[in-house]
Image (cartoon, rainbow, N blue to C red; front, side, top):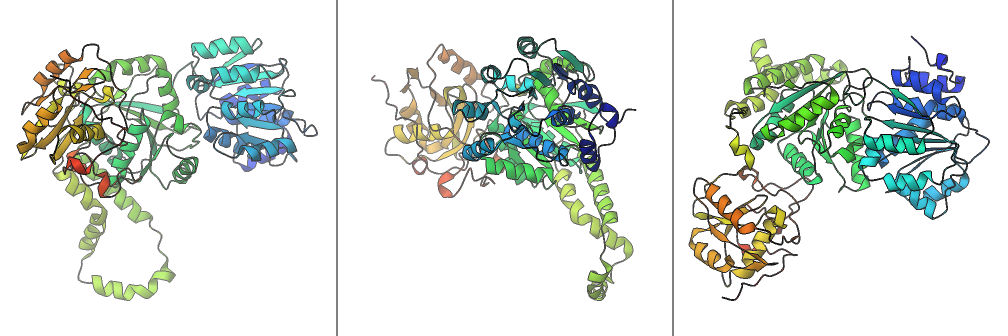
Length: 616
């Protein structure tokens, strides 16, 4: 087995990485480092996240830097600020004993003035996100005329994020006789095209097989009814008491919703998505890195640059739109030679996408079985016992309290004492799962039809009537628009509104039974952006007839983009009533959830223009 010294690295670099615990080079380092130490060697390297890529390009880059020439000699491009900071930090660690080497991270969300001042003082290596670098180039505050090495890390993700034009603009300002290195987890057509355009006779270095997932990762698929996805997530987490993982969601909104639910249910979790400020993102990521959080709920982009080597699980709550993104997600676990588990929670309609992922990564998913309450309680009990065994006892500090403790507990036998100690933590799981519903796995014989719309309950609350309206999320129609519509069109009435359920193309809402006719008269035959509104009483047990009739009325109608937008849960559950979001989505009495009931006249919202009925 080769050593880092065999690869031709300098004594200063060897000393630094030895202190960091580096012993033998990983495969990508063994292949890339000697090649990059040469001249005129362009490389396309295909390797998963967590395979040691940063050291593979970082160590030779540092060694080839001319310290006396204080101008940017190496440009490293990456998709996100988190990854930018991570790479810059690693390079600083690698160059601990290389005197006067200057590495500058350049990214949005921090002071551009301080970055300009650092550039004026002189730097050797610039690590940048494309957007901020272009800004500096337009201001003529960064000079790229002396760049000898260009490295594009996670190039496939930069292209997926729409940075193609930015990369073209940046590379047009860099000398053509440079060395260029592209790192990518997948070999997409875009990567192939850009490598042919900007690289000269590039050597392709592949770690493993093209586009395959990490060999250290188990891939497990749990198939459930769509309505049971969150409950399945909870059971998976509960059956893995030592879980330390990322739950990936498709949208920012879903990310915040799932994180809020987990926090409410007592899990050590938080969210990471693009709507958080940089300070909030940094706080969450730091808490996760030091394991103050067990579960991080994140979007794909937000998780970029989150460099954590010992994740136990990656859970795909929503499958990504691009098959290649699954490779990035699963690559977050099973890193640095460790094993990990990549889980997907799907319903029957997503099995086609699952097969496409299997084809891409060259592996089949194991069929997961949702754990029962008994199985979960057993694992949680073992966890309590393990923690009890590992508790450190400070004899000196506790000795003064022991006589009173012994006196208080002397009536208990050893067996009783053990039972009570473990029950402190165990009881809450036992009580929860004793009466918990069994999660049934859907079958392919059509029994999963209820997944098609993830339909809510069909019966209205006592004293209320359930109404159907032919407008839904695709029309920009959310809970506050329902309330606004009633406020403006049911005149001189204080309408009590109950639960609101929003679907893609239609919605349901409940009003006090005594006010049913007033609401029907006030809302029917309104015209919204050329769209005729239809409101009628929903069936008590099923809404299928209403769905069919609503489809007939859609035609090619003009869909409104809506107004103010409902900031959080489109479809809140009954069990969540009265809940205050940890991030303050619902604060105070003026921000009641739509399913709490109450008077519509107390809940007017902005942005939904008053609609007037057609003349009859």
